[in-house]
Each structure stands twice: as C-alpha cells, then as structure tokens.
Image (cartoon, rainbow, N blue to C red):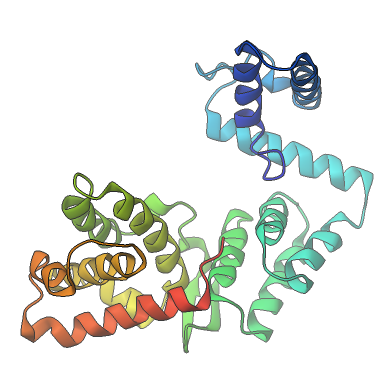
Length: 277
C-alpha cells in the first residue's frame, strides 16, 4: 500500500492490526512506529477513520500523493527526470505505473512534451499507452494526439480520455452488466476475472475500430462482446459450460457468428500479449 501511495488505506489497516490480540509484541511496535511515521508525514491522517473525518477519501488520497511528490521535488530538482526515466527506459511494471501517477502531480510543462514525444516516437504496449494518456489527462493537457495502437493509427482527444472505469460510455458498462447477469450468482469467480479483463481490454483498445464498434449501442454488438468476454474468461477456468451454451445465453445466432468470432479473437490476442497494470 505504501509503495503504491495508498496512505489512507495503509493507515486504516495499521489501526485495525493494532486492535488485534495475540500477536508478537514486536509486531505491535513495528505497526505503531509505521503508523506514527504516516501521521507525522501526512497530518491529515490524524484522527482519520472509516467515517472519513479528513474529508472525501479520494480527494484525501490525491492531496497526500501531491504533497508527497512536491516534497520529493523540493528535495531533488531532477526528480521529474528520474520519474520519466523509470517510465521510458525501464521494463513495464508496477513501478512504471507508480511513476506515471507521480508525474500527474508535477507542475512542470516539460513533462507533457516528453510524454507526448515518447508516445509519438515509439510503439508501446497498448495498456502503457493508455496509462500515459491518463497521466496527460490528469495533468490537464488538452488537444488531439495521433498514435499507432493495436495495429492502427488513431486520433485521441486527451481531455476526453476516461480516468476511471465508470467514465467510459454506457455501452462499455452494459457489456459487463450482461456478463454479470449470467455469472454473478452461479459463477462469481468468472465474473471477477471478467471485470478485470474487460477494464484492461477497453483501455487497450480505446480509440480503435473495436472500441468504436462497442459504442454503436446496437443490442447485437453488446451481446457479441459480452459473449466473447464470457468465452475468453471461461477458456482460462476449469469446468463451466460449453462454447455453444455460452453463445446460446447471449443469443449469438449464425448470422452473428462471424462478428462474435472477430470480437473473441481480439480479446484472445489481448490476453496473449500479457495483461499488466
């Protein structure tokens, strides 16, 4: 939690652990020392609890992250360059995404130019591309950017890039709702993995022809993508219903079979590239 700067969650967890009984006394000392450090570093955590006494939790987390990054920059004038080096030169990992998160809070215009230039000059993993676009959106960058992603050139309006899953248009949400209708009661594990895969897949195809096909709002397209998502996740889990039964659940008739296969192939190709982040 600390590594990914979820300070409020870490504070709540430490407070909970300190209330537990029967552990090694040294653990309590370590937990208390860590909690003391957190509350000293981030005074807004003092007295914070599940009631959210320091205000809206999300805003509190963002304020703490911004405070942390500004303090780092005050200590090291090259901090932005170091973060950009982690993003651009190191293999993609959680550290990449953490560095991008920190770059969101740095008031340095050269960061925008560096990230846009990198997007334009190098073909990146589509998930990494999207995280960079999110960082630019959080930084308040505006305008159109053209880049190559998922096998095609796309034009993206930076200020329209969704930052949270719920910001995606309703058809994107409806696909997952359809899968939920078929799986939440009888196969909640499948639905959990479907949520994870769908969120990352949509980020990876944002702006592409596949993405635009999802926004057509035709019921048949929603059914096609929902069935393809269900099928893709079912392929990775033992047991479950057959391919034919899945297509039947979503009304995939022979006339829709070709488009279903195309959607299913897109999801499978994404899984094969490695789902990270």
